[in-house]
Length: 236
Image (cartoon, rainbow, N blue to C red; front, side):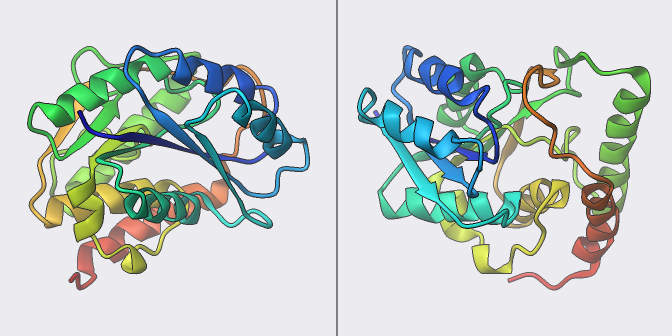
């Protein structure tokens, strides 16, 4: 049957965390949930600990300070691998990723994919609540990545993914260096370079309604320059 772990990094997600936890645990398939919280001052971690009394498959790892998206996921990957999970997911807490789509990503991996990517830019994918400028920026950012790295994933910055455990066991997580959008690109590119099959599953991405976006100019700059570094870096 397989064990499924959804990793959600959080920082100040008190408006969303309980709703997200309840949605994930209401799905027909059993998913365990690991919250990696970076010292949220708004009580996110406290709320998760309250919910642990209700949900046996809910786990939390607390870190001190904002240590970055990439390090949160790598922390979660290692936690999940050590506990023998078969399928490990990345997902945001703000409902930009629909928890119902976890079932579809899992199905893609069970049907031959090594990495399933929730994609805005394949047929059937869509974006909601974005203005045209932001849509074009995101689309052409992914096009730039494909041209520089020469690999055919249309939504290269997507952060909604399912990995088979063998992918995360094979990639040298110690060598992953980027923390923001570039982290998402680097993980896909690393899987591609190792010969793993990446399948894009169409999703509708919905911009967050509650809470504060973590996006910044620094993250965009890291992605732009990081892609060039990935292209010419030596890989094990």
